[in-house]
Length: 278
Ligand SMILES: [Mg+2]
Image 1: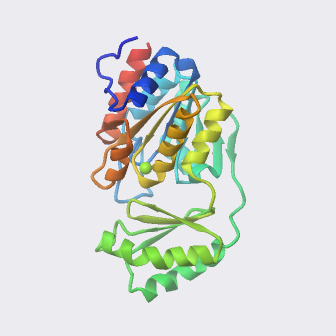
Image 2: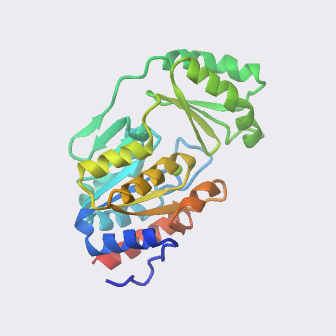
């Protein structure tokens, strides 16, 4: 099958093979996407991040044809589910939303599975205000995420400088309590070590017995999922990595087979993929 109009041409041979496999045998393909920066535009206030209008219906059109579709986010799974309103789309009845990089799992059919909060998180939570104050930071925002805690500097007067100031002290604090720090776009997230989007993608690809995997991400936390696609390729499973381009994180675009222009570019890609599969 040739590539249809509107589908981008991957820049690597492996990416071209991944896209071709998805088009040839969609029933064994897994599509996994990040939420923020991929389905939803990045906004200054992360407590209100609706998906780009029309993108969830486009995802549903693709889901009708593919073996499996999943969302893998650093946010709590229920938050992504509430923003995404995925249950409005009958074609997303098999959707799985992984939250906290995979610590939490929401199945459209059975609901949310969540582990207890990690030991040490309460101590980190209670130490953070004094830690910020000790470094002269008064304009960072601490987000309580139940099984993680995030420190955002996007709305600080100097987002990059404040992030740089806090990275070392917050990493030390997290490690003292047996936790890990996941850096992101003007955010440091303190969470249990071990779960990352790569492990989650590998486990779900195995669960669904996928023969091809496409992952779309935009941030540093998505790079382990790109690593996972490369590891799958070494084991005979074709893959395609897509970066939802951003000027903030060029490391992701540099690693991807395809770069699209943010959530509008993702929506166009999903529509082109759905057209090509119809
Ligand atoms: Mg993201």
